[in-house]
Image 1 (spheres, rainbow, N blue to C red):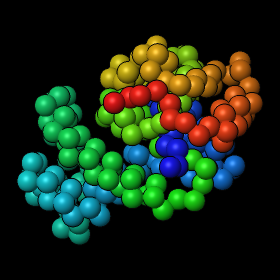
Image 2 (tube, rainbow, N blue to C red):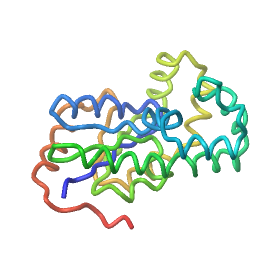
Image 3 (spheres, rainbow, N blue to C red):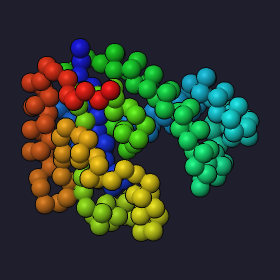
Image 4 (cartoon, rainbow, N blue to C red):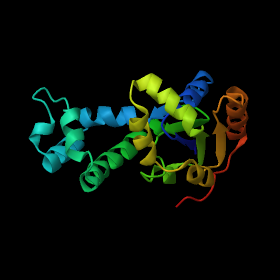
Length: 203
């Protein structure tokens, strides 16, 4: 059985950078957020479920989701956000399973900011957490997304803490501008290549 490895980290932690390094070494990466956005347009069951829950108006006539309208509906409404996630997450799980079966590699990676929160960590043999100090993360995101520090802090507050991620992960990558990144990732990569066993029992 091919190993399935989850990679998670808070906003601005640099988990995408870690994934790009692994891709250079031939490891396929499933980017959950990007795939979810695509499925909101291509997965007919998901599209119908979203329309049934939030109204036909959350989609344009051309079939494209009206992301701004949908975001305005679930913004600051925890129950509606949970409902939306309860529709999207199963679709992403199914998509990942189908995608993983098509890959020819020693292991595959599932990148997800909310790997633990969504429950998708349960499908992973190992989990890697990418960790960086809050001040560095804030600097990265404000520069990258052109948003305010307050907006970044709000998004960070809605995510699982780094301490909790560390406790629940098999490997930690420190992307804090003090530790060299590639040697850390290479060490984990070699461990995974040599591993024929699953990680912690997450069920």
